[in-house]
Image 1 (cartoon, rainbow, N blue to C red):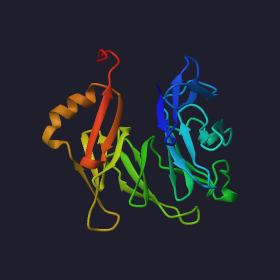
Image 2: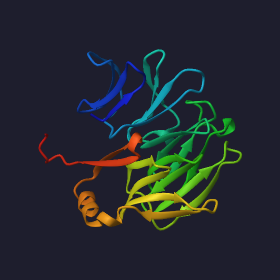
Image 3: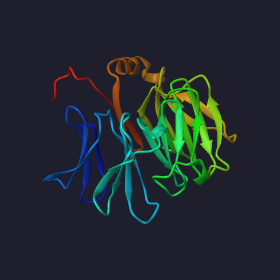
Amino acid sequence: MLCAKIVNNAEVIAARSTGTATRYFVGAGTTWTTLATAASLGGKVRHDEFTFDGTHKVVFVDGVNYPAIYNDTTNALTFLSTPTDIQGASYVRVYKNHIFYANGSKVIFGAPYSATDYTVASGGGIIDIGHTITGMVIFRDILFVFARNKIVQISGSSVSDFVTSPVTQSIGCINGDSIQEVGGDVMYMSPDGLRLLSATDRNDDFALEVASNPISKDVATFMASATNFSSMVIRGKAQYRIFSYVSSDPAT
C-alpha cells in the first residue's frame, strides 16, 4: 500500500503497487473500483486537498509520475501532463489558493484557483531553494520548506508578493513524513533528533529546539533502525506519534 486517503464520509482512495505501475482505487469498505493507473511505479504517495471551484478535489504525488487530481463529485482521477517541472514531485501543499509542488530543489506553484495552469503569465512560478526538498508544512499562515540542512519560509498571497526567506542554514529535516503540527508547534525529524519549529517572541524568529534530548539514545536507535517513517497527531491529547517500517520485522 502506497497511500490511503479518506475523501468523504463514505469513500477511501487507495494507491498500491501493481509491480510495474501505481494504481489508484476507490472503495467504501467492501468493494474496490480501479480509478486510474499511473505510467510508472511511484514511491510513497502524498496528498493535499482543495476546493477552488466549489468541487472538493484531492491532489496526489508519488515522486515519479505526474500529479493526479481526484474529483470527489465525478469520482474521476486524472493525471496532469504538463509542465515537465511537476513530473516526479514528492510533496504537495495547497497554500493561498495555489498548489505548491516540491520536486528536487524546486518549489513549483500554479496559478491561483487552478490545478492545471502553471504559466507565469497566469500567476504560476518556480522557486529554487538550492537543496533537495525533504518536506513542506503550512504553519501560522506561512509555507515552510525543509531540506536536510536548510529551512526556508514562503509568505505572501500571490506571485506578485511571494517572499522567500531563510529560517536556518544549518539544520533541517531528514524525513518529510515526520512533519506534524502539534500543540501549537511543528515537530520534525532532524539529523540529531526530533525538533520543534518554535516561534519566539520576535517576528520571523524561530528557536529550533531538540525536543527529544531527554530520550536521545532511544531516538538515535529508532532513527537508525529504518528509512521509512510515518507520523500522526492525537489531537485530543496533543500527542505526537512516529512509526518506522522495517521489512525484516515480522508482522504482529
